[in-house]
Image (cartoon, rainbow, N blue to C red):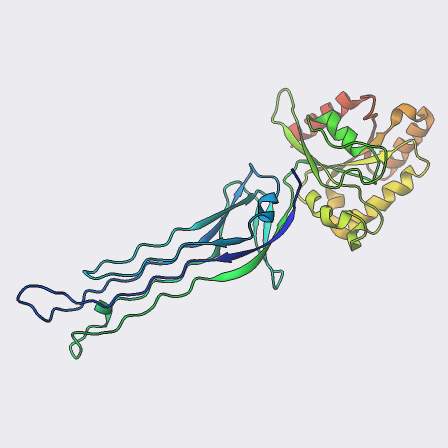
Amino acid sequence: MAFVDEAKFYVKAGDGGNGCISFRREKYVPKGGPNGGDGGRGGDVVIIASQKLHSLIDFQYRSHFKAERGMHGQGKDMHGRKGKNCVVTVPQGAVIKDAQTDEVLIDLCEDGESFIAARGGKGGLGNTHFASGANRTPRIATDGEKGEEKWLKIELKLIADVGLVGLPNAGKSTLLSRLSAANPKIANYPFTTLEPQLGVLHFPYSESCIIADIPGLIEGASDGVGLGHNFLRHIERTRILLHVVDASHENTVPDFKTINSELEKYKKELLDRKRIIILNKSDITEDKRLANLDKYFKSIGLQSLPVSAKSGHNIDALKELLATLFNNH
């Protein structure tokens, strides 16, 4: 199933039902008073967040959501029924924006959180409301109000505890497959991962955590270059960042600085998150080089851990480290 994290959709609330013009018709009372009922209120379009959804794929097949209109009023003071609401279920972590102004309307972070995207129109008034001493048989009723309608934009920010970041081909997908039961596409060329991948890491004595593999970022990602512009927002909610670098590559430190700079440009607060540097491909890297890299990262206040996602070296140590961090928090 494809991963979709942006969509545009139209919402239309139900129109209110019209009020009714009616008069009592009783035996021996040829000119009874008014008894026209009110129209029912139109249904709302309600957006509800669900942790069971992880993609906006459904919006590729349906982009218009309309609530039911209110029923018209009838004689004998019978009011019209309220229109049924239209419920739109979206993944937890969805941001709803006005499609024209790009204004953020709601950020649905919690499971079950709801938002009325379009309100139904009020029902019209029946002629009973217009009776007076001067006019005891009013032939006046009002139409129901139109329901709200608008185009909205939805953007998905994944709800994940741990985010994997790094340059393309750093080994993030392989690492995710080692840490969880996820089975992402893995190959030895850049941009293998074209969409965020989610995995679940289970701890023996505490709650599990969700890990998101963010597609490879490159220099200029924060300005829209490469694939990173579309996916940087998915690490905004993560509590821990695992910055994966290729320790065997001669440009390990420059590569780290490239991604670090993009994170800072996108949102400076990301550098305040707990970050661990994963020195991947340690199985083909000299011990002396690993020691020098560890020394460098310590000098800038970051913890590093040599790992081989391919051979599994130190994977258990990384799991224990993550378990400790989550238990401490």
